[in-house]
Length: 321
Image 1 (cartoon, helix red, strand yellow):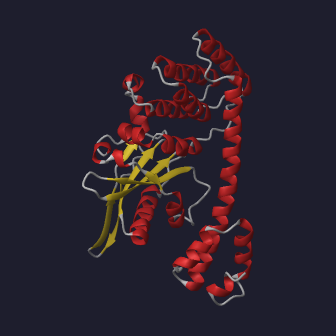
Image 2 (cartoon, one colour):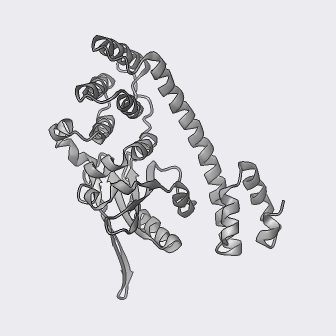
Image 3 (cartoon, one colour):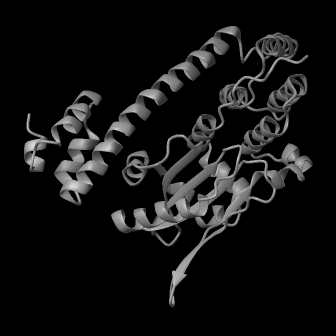
């Protein structure tokens, strides 16, 4: 009997992959938009701005949302909002959430926003592309581009032949989602990691992609040890000791630290989000100085303010030292 697969974490590696390989992500999954962006001017991720408009997000869902600032060739600044749905079961209110985040960004920051969705689930019928609501002639009709990863499974040969490094991330995600047999999953993990060497990637790229693939495809402990032993032997035979036991230790340590930071950040965002809801109900829209106070607050300060809000009658009193 096969050992059960460990719990797979898909949203964390997606967030890291988007940060590491955003241009390649856009080129592979949204090829019609990629050439419209002036990549020579760089891009910036706006985590704080995204958190400002999602304090009431349901943390129980598995989302990997990122907000990036890019520039077009006509000199305009555009914000690209990426929603990655990595939940096993489709979310019925996904289109509504897409619209909510979109209009909140427009309302709060007044910039051009392009919302894009990546569906990493395994339900072929789940394809939200539109949020429509209206009555008596007053309507909202919000449409957004979607990339369904399941469709790319039928184009596997093209993914394997692609020179886009993000193709490996997509292939790892597909196998992690579609295969529940540990030994078969190990075979694919081995195949995908070896593709990096066949493509001649540099050491830094190999370590980066190995980390992402390793994070997406988790194996039972015995199979994981087999995989590593075989991988070390493979590298030795090619005289390419990139992912050494020391590197592996660093990858594991980095993952653990990333999870700890994620939990810590989640706790703080939860406290801040709860306080923002309370503040909105009691005082309405926050002035900029109060917003800055919240952004710079520690867990201890947020906890104190949550308790204090019950007794104060002004923002000045709430934030008093």
